[in-house]
Length: 514
Ligand code: C2O
Ligand code: CU
Ligand code: CU
Image (tube, rainbow, N blue to C red):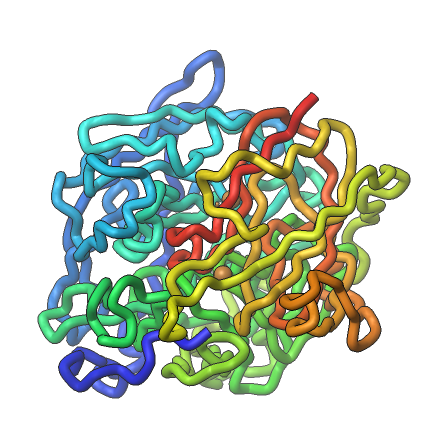
């Protein structure tokens, strides 16, 4: 889909080229501490507030929203089968930080502009604790969620999910890491803190006064109602513009998160060395994969090891060359995100290793598939060809629930992408296994509703061999995934994780029934 179109000169806020890269050190999010125990379990308290944060040495302080006074929020460290409570408190002002497009409120009329709800992305929790879009609460209110952590180790993240306004709340800064660890992880000889570092990759735009710029409604004549995808022009990593990280000549483990609203990332290292990917959204991969490039859609995570031991003294740039939108392009590509400087002396011998085989994954083996669902991804245009909204299954969010899988069964969901964009499709509650992708005749499908394949099915990528919670559905392809509903019953959502799409109808409820 075309996006902002050419950026009008009136928006001369673009900062790329004006902000010197690699002058500020990479901030490391702090680890959150519990405030007490409740029923013998750690209880955390996280206020959401508005504050100022310096995002670059040459930028005036930026007003942002954050959890526990920082953007991104502090990291929550949890362990499998050790439940915790988190009280999320909305202490934000009653006026939104960013201009609001009221035609897109999504939550209905007469809803407060400032409303938040925190979703723990990838968590197996009951619906009441999931942070579903309609469970938002206004300033002065809070919600306590129970996270049982009944799943293997993985990189989760928490972020805002309030109906109709997620794109603005997350853009304002409401996101943070939640690292779940387990005994398998403890047994692997992975690099550990301080050599294990979470890295949230985001794009932002700034006005010349240093404030966040978000091009809402009516910014271009072309998009009078809605900006279908936001692409910032400046890389922000852990809340700093194009930072640097001084490293020792040893192995590091990085938890990459694509925390952008809409931008895909195709990451590489300027030294030409590989990433060793050991995990993705759903936890560890069956075996590690050496990759020159890693493609990440919004909300995807990549757990990687980078070995700096042969690069003493070098400056290594983390680069990106993914077209925006993906894969059609046309918008500004942010070419570099951060720099690694291999300038620190080795403080201790590196005893870590890159595991080869990690985990035997019998992914839903033997679980019979009881249903195959054909689910379309499509965009709705007005008579002038401007995008108005995007739909899943041809239906808006408020239409009655059509996907009602039965607890204890497995299904195949075939995502039929009728648009020109890649959509990062995310299911709450259960992780999925990607089966394959197959090109089909889009025009024929649109006129006859028949799926005519135009080529063979292509197996999933090597770094998609583990469980996933975000699936890239490419244009003109049917992406097939298998999912087992085996945890809780109740109503959840599935949606596109391009936040502008999610906020404009590309989200549907689904209900696990007994
Ligand atoms: Cu990361 Cu429903 O979201
Ligand atoms: Cu989620
Ligand atoms: Cu989408």
